[in-house]
Amino acid sequence: MTFEETLAEWMPSQRWFAGKGARILDLAIVTDTELVGGDPGLHHLIVAVTQGSTISQASTVDSYQLFLGLRENLPDHLRHVLVGVADDGRIAYDALHDPDLTRLLLQAIADGGRAGPLCFAHEPGAEIDTSLDSLVLTGEQSNTSMMFGEATILKVFRRPSPGPNPDLEVPRALAMRGSTHVAEPLGWIESRLDGAPVILGILSRYLRAASDGWSLAATSVRDLYAAEGRIHADEAGGDFAGEARRLGEATAEVHRDLARAFGTDELPPEAISVLADEMFARLDVALATVPELGRHADLLGSAFADLAKLDTPLSVQRVHGDYHLGQVMRTQTGWVLLDFEGEPATPLAQRRALSTALRDVAGMMRSFDYAARHQLVARPDGDRLHASALEWVRRNQEAFCAGYAAAGGIDPGTHAILLRALVLDKAVYEVMYEARNRPGWLSIPLGSIADSTADA
Image 1 (cartoon, helix red, strand yellow):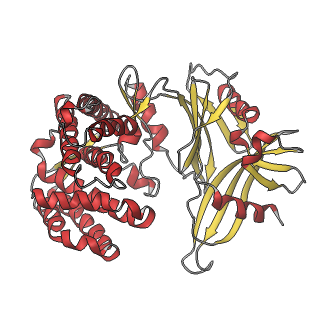
Image 2 (cartoon, helix red, strand yellow; image 1 turned 60 degrees about the vertical axis):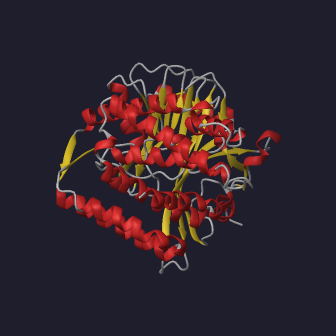
Image 3 (cartoon, rainbow, N blue to C red; image 1 turned 45 degrees about the horizontal axis):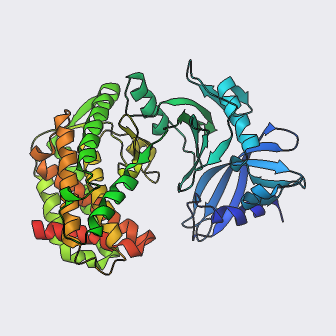
């Protein structure tokens, strides 16, 4: 078996591999750069994977990067990341789980310089402790991150994309403006792919003693549900509304800094009509895929039609683009926003394009809805707690929007038609996502759309 065949067997079992379920037609090692010789050795690979029915018909090619460790004998603590036998007879494994090798990556970023096509760089004056061991974080789907002590975190993009990386571009711009709502980048690894610069990994400040927004919101919901409907959302011990308001304020402040860093523009009314047409197109695909959505087609179509009728220009700017409770962290000093790369499946030009800031507001409003509803999916008393869930969602959505407006953001209350269309468009996207990936959660966006019908 060739090493390419070994990789073709190993990669589909990794959580960051995007082509699960599709047959690998071809796998080619595009570049193989030795970063460290000896035992253990360290190599960096760019791998092109072709998947589909046939190479000539309906096939796609995706690029992945691998940091491979090579050892004569693999220690027990690394056996869970075994890849297979390399061409030289040594054992290959995922080096991002090996502190002996990741420490060398950290040192290379701190020192700067090149290794073949790879360039290691750091911000001027960045303080990087290179003596720390790494620990891979769990839970990520498309990337791999490792923390070094409680000082820094290195995020490695498993599917690097040519061109500017918003997850470096945006935090750098915000940090330069003194934003307290971003984990400032300290360094990065870059190369070239398809003739264009590509960011392979970003080293940032680690957020000590921080909790993600999803976990905090989920705790609040559990406290409310534990009372089994006997209390209101504002009476629950873990009431989240105060934090939701502060998160809205932080979001508005980040949007203000993004507008200053990247500029703003205006969409004329005819462009707003195009935006509505795109929503209609997504709805058509969803209706064909999920027949249950059909009972709400009139509501959704009406919301998008109302958007198309707006006759005033729409201000647009750089936004987060994939904003939800899992993308924010509550630190001891306030809320911090993470992961500015946007939806990975979206083309880079679209992720970097200007959009209405209310798109992020709509994303967070949908996230509050998910935080409340997902805990009811498997509960036998879910129907009885439905009213409590809606109360919690509305309380926190209103608090978030109030904080956003108070901190200088676009007042969601005066842009109800736009915000409603954005929220429902996001829900339609979620219907498609759940139908394809988590059918057990399909009831969450469908239930939200149904409740919107009742409120209309």
